[in-house]
Length: 155
Image (cartoon, rainbow, N blue to C red; front, side, top):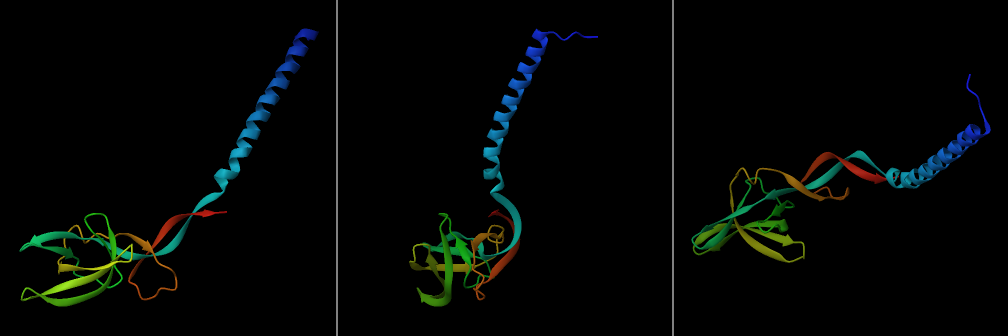
């Protein structure tokens, strides 16, 4: 049998005391971190976004002509080569240089409108859907893409 003397009993109790103190400090440190981790969680929600496509340009006869998708519609977002996003407001045909050309009236993020001369043609680059801006639920006229996405939600 093992003998328990005063020295071993004191060292045993001192070890228990130090261990309890170390665990107590570790528990309070993790307790402070838990609320920040639990404050946000990920859930799947149905999100309505604008249709966004990338368009490139081609120079024909000294004029810059944008290559737009064939299915281009009012309300779509177009990403131009300089990573500028514009929203299509109107499409129309105008007379330029004796030829009838298609023009798209677009509005940029700063509110300015401009006309872009386009040719409708499907390419590998403008056929891919990009992630467009989120639309409010009351907007029923703008063409949208609905997808289920994981969103972070506050508790």
